[in-house]
Length: 289
Image (cartoon, rainbow, N blue to C red; front, side, top):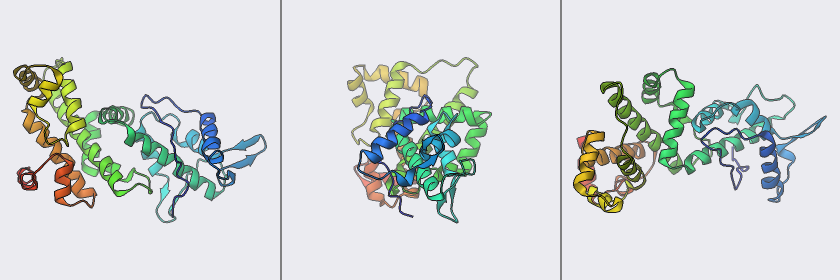
């Protein structure tokens, strides 16, 4: 069914889990639908105490108390009923009509989805950790469940485009790989591991932002951060445990693998998207892994 109620603008649902009140959502709905020249009739129901919007009801009943954006998407994806192609949730007020509920849940799903995609990889990583802590007993259980079954493939809304889905899944695959490496490193080290230095943290952040840049290198990063290449190389190996080239190639291959699985892009296009100038080099590196 065509989703023609996707709002033009969206409310950022901040990672910290600050619950957005139903009143705020009602105000937004009035501004975005009424202010935009659309009729409200399809997205509201009349109750004895006044007007109530299903969008606010969706937030209260489905999303209240869920602090991670990924957790919100998981709840919303469970409301979709493939046989009917509609979003339904039994806990929502029975006074709302089916068409109202379907439209409201779809709208909320798109809002939450757009908010996650708009965040940096670092924000997404933090959100994933929030989700793991609130949904699983341990990191081990979380990683085992998510890396084997990959349930998050079904989290995007039905209106999501192919490229958006590919970016979403690719980012989560990368973040799960990072978490796995970080966790395995912590469990094999001493009980009081030394925290990663601020310099290395800045390098990791830059890599996550610019891995698609074919000119990204240790030399370029040392110039950008105003430190010597020797010092940066020593700090990197000390904290990461593998060479810069190996880490960057691994990240690029993870991104490429996800795009090959989930998108319709050709190999040459994907090689450029992950930072390769020469498709032949990309194929060679990909086959090594």
